[in-house]
Length: 513
Image (cartoon, rainbow, N blue to C red; front, top):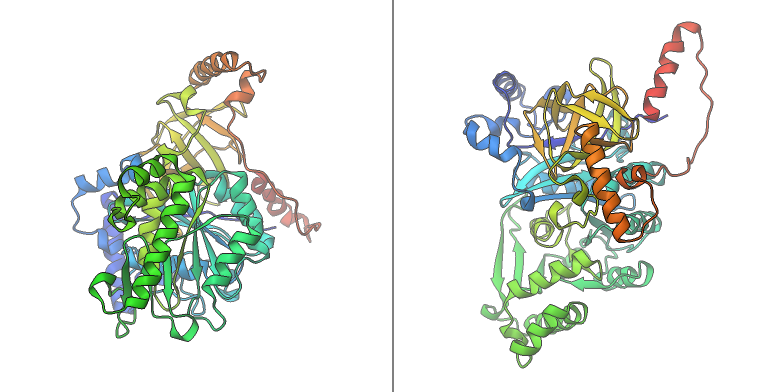
């Protein structure tokens, strides 16, 4: 039986002085041992030393950024499409790590289990949190193997957006269809990233057509590749009509430049990009009435005059409406195309406040959270991961479990850094929390601040139901949709070799939470 651990790491956060001291010790030891910053003493870790010397007051405000600046996203794909490599590049360019991890070397941040590093695959979902140009991004790298479909389900249930990664030489594959349907079920807006454009056999056109034909989606081509396979060297931004080229002399891909096509002597590329941009404008106008009116009234005679910002805003609305999916391309292994992907995540995917959660009107500003994963720790007992939809969670807070009709107290509130946990003073709506002390909470339970809060929400839900002539009882209206457990792909019976091992077998029941 797999015991899965979902990690939610935060970078550049407020850390109590005792942890700052520990981090200082880590920094010294890591430098002496010449270890990578995110693999200290055999464990994964973000670039925690970067926190030292920061202003503590400013860090307090960073823990709970404005909800409009939060993005909760997942990376999903068929196995070997390059999810973990893409995640490693994202962490590096965002400043979360100081060196590039590699799946083959077994030193990636999100694949920290011994089994994952040995096999070079993602077994459990792992999350990291980082900042990108003023935005807080909570990112979860999910498994691509069919055996671990449950991990993808857990993630998508609590996420607001997703990046679907494709092997540009293979297009849509078997597990791609599975995770895409899961995202459809949870109404999650998506961005497509055509990875491995440098691979032999890579075809941008084929990959786009497979998205259109097999996923029945409408791709919005926001980029065009400059070359394919061995000739791939960069991308063209269709929206801004700029050429993005990465420095060949740079090994880490940090250095790249944007060059307006109008300033370059490449009439063929300019013509191709102009045609692609015009087609994009027409496609978005067909899907968004507000944008269509703008184009007809002001830019119908010359699409070149349409500001990129207007087009980007319309693409954002279309993405949220899930009537089309933006498509970008690059090569994570060759360090090309990741920074524009990050820009697209913050620009086109929704913030928590843009998601239409009907139940929020019942709870107002009171606490409402969903327990989506329970992990048993030998020292601390059950660790419950929660997505906070409204209100605030703090240590020593008494909460009410609607499903179990019981009241418990959160003893500690933790913020994981990869596979390490740090105590924090509070977390607000839109964030994901790790709590200690909840012994009777199970996966899929709805958490509120008190029983009276649940009753007040029930009254509001009842009034709303009467207006819409709904027949659901109050409890059904209050409960958030839990995590749907897919059918197992393998069954087995486990028997202890002796009575002394029986307690360990009994402990497996904890994982059923």
